[in-house]
Image 1 (cartoon, rainbow, N blue to C red):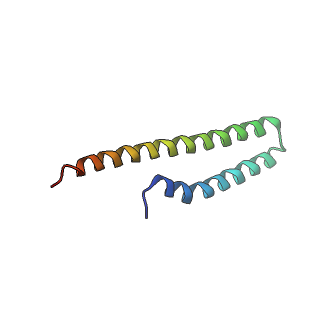
Image 2 (cartoon, helix red, strand yellow):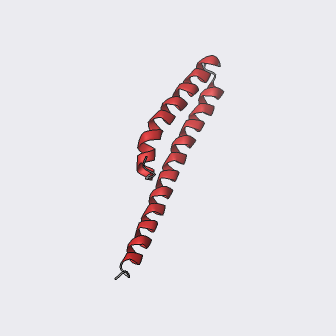
Image 3 (cartoon, rainbow, N blue to C red):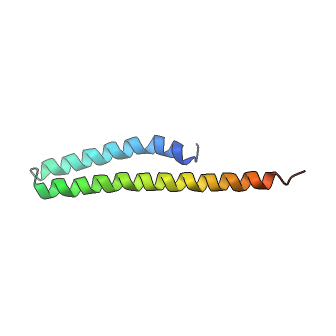
Length: 78
């Protein structure tokens, strides 16, 4: 199993967003489509998307820093 942040994103994100969409729609239907519930789940949905985006960017930056550090140390080997 790869620990690359892009691989984790490709594997986990679709299931996460499908589940979140299903739960949001179920609660909206259960609440008889009140405007408050629609706004509430829209905000949750957008926050989840922004969180995934932030974590993806942070992970990619961290991996690039580690890659640069490893490459710079290997040049000193005989």
